[in-house]
Length: 256
Ligand code: DGL
Image (tube, rainbow, N blue to C red; front, side, top):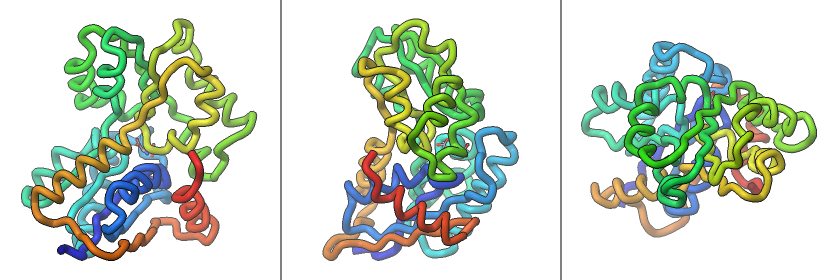
């Protein structure tokens, strides 16, 4: 039995969509969430900037006694997961990545849109993922630089956010997709608006469940799972205003 918390990190509030899945899969674990809303969005920063911020926050989370780190941010995973693993070779570190494998399993010769930040889509890690998964698929990269801010201010539905989604997907929807991969952890909170724009047909997928199950598998393998009473959840943020902390709580329990 290991009571130390599992740290969950994102550039802001998006990682709460992953924390929800982690709690569902491991309700007895203690979680320590950190969102770097002060520096969000990460998606339009340089790789060096994203890497420096991620390494700094990982160090802080490990120094607070975390037994594992979940990088609940596709952008930070793309830019920094190799460096994190090199720096902490004995730690359990799991990084979310766009659920392209899942999409290709469901639609082996399908058309798959990947919505993600500019940084995620330009990194070598994504090119490698595309190469591994995309032999028979038509994979379309859709950078969506303007969407994170809607989630950061809690504007999840309505005409403005739907217009923003439509603008970001402009040109990607000429041919109907079979699947839409939400390759940024903020986007599941905009699922309704995204559904309104892409229509009923495509399956909308994200990597939260896969990441949560992989985290449980790794902790179990290492004998580090906590069992017994329900765990606790501590939410922290680099911009801890009352409004933002309230929004964090709301997103953690929102219907999406
Ligand atoms: N939530 C993050 C991701 O999964 C990044 C959002 C951002 O800060 O640009 O990619």
